[in-house]
Image 1 (tube, rainbow, N blue to C red):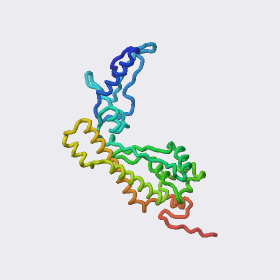
Image 2: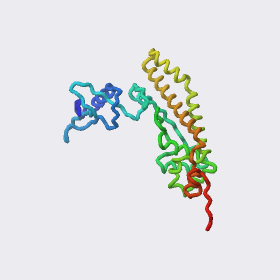
Image 3: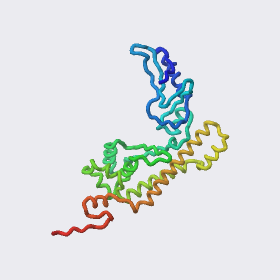
Image 4: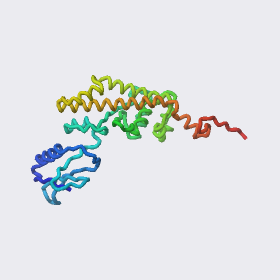
Length: 272
């Protein structure tokens, strides 16, 4: 633990400014990925009015060596730029937040909202997609819920309420899976069409090295967002190609009942 200093409690405004200055001026991109708090503010003693600002480091620090701060690992480059004025441009900081919503005009709005709320979600859900990483585990179940309808709507009946989310974790039907692929791909293409440059053009701008620092940050964030959008579109494009090979709810249910075999063959039961 490194004690940086202490000030009187009556001077808390200056103390806060002192802490902010330390935290904002000592950033270094490192390979250390600890989610534990690296600092704390506490009283010097039980009855003391003095405050102590302390830094903790997960690695050894030599006397006189500079201490660097690792910022919130869950923040995207866009959030880092907004909050601190810098970015890291690593793939785990290149994030695009996809917003999904149960439409109020949906004829099954009430049932879907009840199911969503029972599983920790709401009318709207926000999923952070990270460059080079798989989709968030709960994204596909929520998407399938939003798209559920037609002949699949029986799963919204109250009798399935305790098990519906487990069903949604796996493909429901070809039409449901086709719908989520189309909706997500259309959303990605629509978002990409709003950018006035391509990824290649952005990267060329960055390589020239002639941008104002603030503009350089903006271009890098823009390029990262487009890469993630392309990744999402590619993921669901590949899923569209796999639709024929997926096992859907009906097949799983028939297998559970022993009416079809593992290879999909129909099993005929002879009465004795």
